[in-house]
Length: 68
Image 1: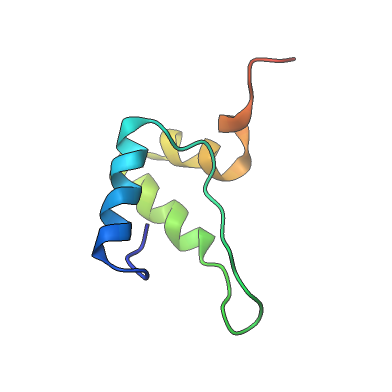
Image 2: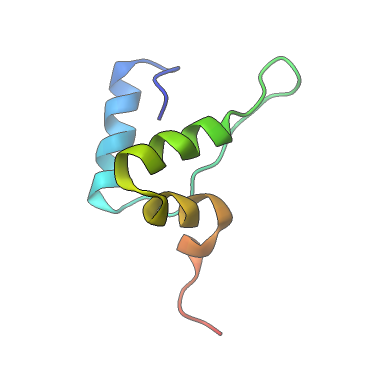
């Protein structure tokens, strides 16, 4: 989302979001030397697509299948 893994990865991530194929945004942080930046990713998505799109991708609501 943020371009840390190159322009191609960033472009594909935004394309997937635009296509509606993303259900969850997560991090593969590897410890203290590589901390997750999910707050920055959430803000980037919220700025570009709106908080109503961003929030469910980070709090898990987008994974719900309609079960009560």
